[in-house]
Amino acid sequence: MIALPSGVRIYLVAGVTDMRKGFDGLAALVQQALAKNAFSGQLFVFRGRRGDRIKVLWWDGQGLCLYAKRLERGRFIWPQVREGAVHLTAAQLSMLLEGIDWRLPQRTFDPQCAA
Image 1 (cartoon, helix red, strand yellow):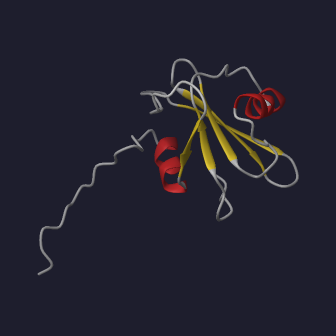
Image 2: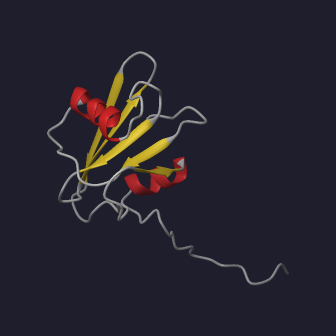
């Protein structure tokens, strides 16, 4: 994915989104459902009904960018809330895009002592 500017806020748009929507439809959804400005430089992440597709909408200062991804196996982990948005960190977005459960990542090693 394209490197994001520092300090950018990332929002998962709760619920299900019609994945046929493009730039204008998703921007209108951001403004109507979330009462946020789609042209503010924040990222807005949408998920389809089956859970295997997402779209990310982002204003880069010159125009809207639309990133789409479809998982061949598995589903994108999504919050249980039905409306509004959930804030993510850049690390959580990275895990989400890889199909990893971003809510509670499992560590492979847990140190028990320093020496």
